[in-house]
Image 1 (tube, helix red, strand yellow):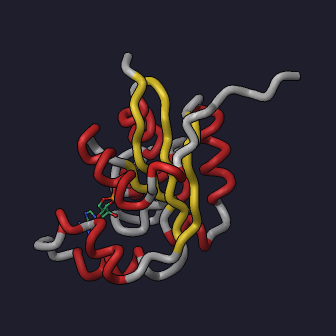
Image 2 (cartoon, rainbow, N blue to C red):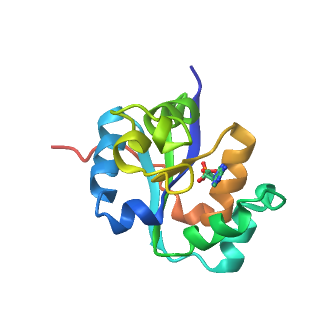
Length: 147
Ligand code: CMP
């Protein structure tokens, strides 16, 4: 399987519940590598731009309101099949339908407050990573220090 990068967000509901650390621990346990990470408060303009593909949807205004309701943690993840691997860890979009053991099943509430976001395809991942991170902020060196 090809090594891929994907973009992830720990959303305001999960940050507010203080489960960001548990989510990061699951990422590390899964074997996905964290290449970049930052905690930020999205502006209204920033959230609207990020979710522009959904701007005609009836839930768009609520989604923007939610995503700007508190800080988020943005991440670049890398690994074999990282896009699907991260989506499998998250579970289905609607937390009410997400099985226990998935991030959205364990930490989300509903279809909007669903704890995490992940890119759905390689091109989306490239766009989303570049929306949040400069190339210089992405750490491509993953080897451990010598003992
Ligand atoms: P995410 O993976 O961040 O991508 C788009 C987001 O829109 C999705 O997670 C949900 O949080 C949100 N979303 C999708 N469908 C609905 C809906 N029917 N009502 C409210 N929010 C939605």
